[in-house]
Image (cartoon, rainbow, N blue to C red; front, side):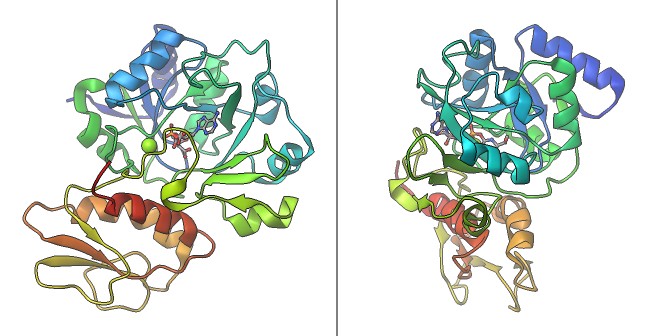
Length: 311
Ligand code: TXA
Ligand code: MG
């Protein structure tokens, strides 16, 4: 079983050496842990897919340390500038036109002429991307179609010895993946709800389209994702026989996303509690209704995917 290490100058050095050699490293971000590889190295990017056992080459998010670095790879417009000014570094990913001279791996973007790019806020991710000086491609550091990891131990449980290094950065602060916004069309479109709410985005750039649920257009976003091994039953008021109950707000339950009904706290707890409740022998995980505003949109999106049995 691969060791989990705390961040230090030596670990930074070791991580850079692994990345240079085309290997992968599991790193903390403020959303979920990422499985990072050199985004300019096709072989290294291919390794991400094989380690995760991803069935298809979904395009990956490219992580930079600053907007300035990101501009080497994608073309910014005024909306991207405005959003970046206020929300980066942070849990939002922009889909933008790839620059013709971009040296990034085509495999990382599945050959698309657009690129998904974000600036993570976590100090460990920041330090590593700065030290390495090249952008990192990083999907969540878990086997494909399983629950995204929000701690180093989650990564270890999912990927074990498939990764040479797991850097511990504590429990992630946001707990759900970044919001993905497509800025390549006239009207910006939310492709994946996430750590930044739609309301917050609208307050900066005005109206945006939102695509949620089964019809989501982000290429490769399978309906079933983030799933525990037991069935999920959503919008449940009380548990039935044999079910564990995941509450929200002032509810009687061993497991509760947020006793005070705080959606940010609920997002941060979501994947951790889904893991904890994923116990063989139970009939299902019943989940209380979660309001569909603010981060509630991202929470409901992940719950719906987890509840989808086919696909
Ligand atoms: O919070 C996060 O975003 C985490 C952490 C590790 O940074 N990363 C993450 O990456 O969730 P990943 O690879 O699991 O999600 C990438 C998503 C996919 O759903 C993919 O379809 C979409 O981004 N995507 C990537 N490139 C795209 C593009 N050019 N156009 C549209 N969607 C794209
Ligand atoms: Mg993922």
